[in-house]
Length: 278
Image 1 (cartoon, helix red, strand yellow):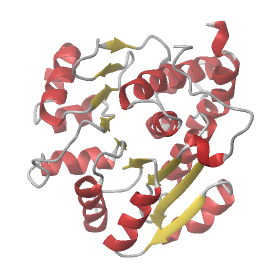
Image 2 (image 1 turned 30 degrees about the horizontal axis):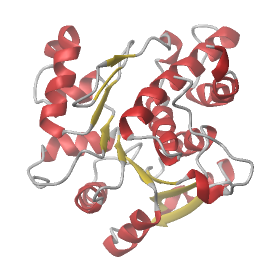
Image 3 (image 1 turned 90 degrees about the vertical axis):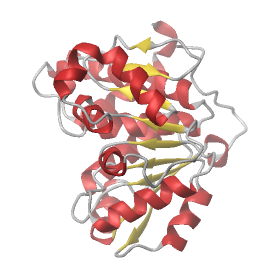
Image 4 (image 1 turned 180 degrees about the vertical axis):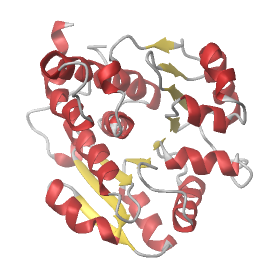
């Protein structure tokens, strides 16, 4: 793991560490956008831009003044594509909803992402499950990272969750065959898989992280590490490790019950700083 951390250089600037576009947060849902964006910064991303609903502009400018905030009220494909062109990596889905506008944003992004890495989470996965690739056939998807929890995986595979729980490794393989890219199947021991690589089973993290917003933090961590120069597979593998390890640090001070998603972010620096002491 220590070999995967993106390198930092004395003579460098924010442009050297990648630009993350976080497409997140529907009307009145600024929290998910904040958590994903701050997490991306916490693992070293050079610049983060949040593309969100206009209602979230002021809360996000207050919560995370380091980020650029660009807002929409209606679907504007030209504006969306300009933002995608700007980015090194795109995170899409946290708190985005499954509204008509969100659907248009997600489908247009997936159709126009090209070879640029993209982390698809939360409502991005829900809309993908609804589409089930019907409008996305023929696209290059090796650069996709899908981060479903078990229920989202059941929707993506169009099967009951009871078929997923006892067969997680099989589910990861099926998801990769159906959707390609890197699959991050979130559970108490998250699995990371990409064709041609060994299956990775994460052993950090704990039950205190079973709280709303934890997944938004993970998508931000993975996106931030990819922005720093890691491949989608290495960024995902290191991302789930760092995320879980930060949750372990948080539990050590706050206990099993009281950890919030923001506490995971606050402990990411402990993981990044102590990376040589595994």
